[in-house]
Length: 306
Image (spheres, rainbow, N blue to C red):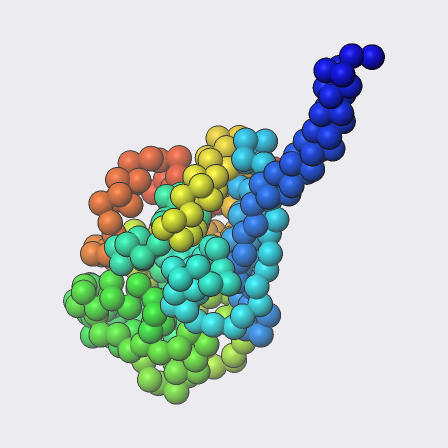
């Protein structure tokens, strides 16, 4: 056998296992890991919705972007801390939170409103026996005399303050206790939020008369450098919107199912206020009707699970 042919066979025999090694390691390296915060001490039932939505976006984008791995990171921390960890590329790759100009400057937003604008429709929790006081409110001027409670690191606090409301802020986990102790009198919550909270105490109740409304989308946020992950999540969410699976999850998830009807919005007086923290890019999204609840349906549409 000619020497050149022998050398060729030897070379190929060396390259074949090398090519398998390179392929295997490339495939392993291409797995996208997404580390997200999971609270187990102060369990927020809403976190299950965002995790399901993230899983949906990653799964639907898999044919284009490759395999993925979702890793829960169990660290108990306030909202502002999770943002800092994503910004500094420590422990977490993603956070879901209400947007603001400051947050969009800190992190890369994925510009898809995860709750279709639901976060901006606010009904309140009050102390039991106070409803008659709120029944007398018939103007936004009158509402501004009421002391409102909000989280110290929530954008809502600044939104309300800039609109002239009296706001007392505190740790999110302490707000219901602060309401009970009369540190403030009205605790506005997005219409999917108060139901679990009302079950925790027998001295509070749902306010029945008022609806406060402002644009306040919740986005997924990633580190500014992680543009590929932001691109992938938006791609997956857009696919879910277009094929109807986004709405199917939204309308049938335990935290959102039936809440529009339960809130009885048609019986409430609505006060619309401006959100000064809304970036131009976020404001531009308001034109994409498929991303939002259209004029917020009074009764949730029925979308079959199958």
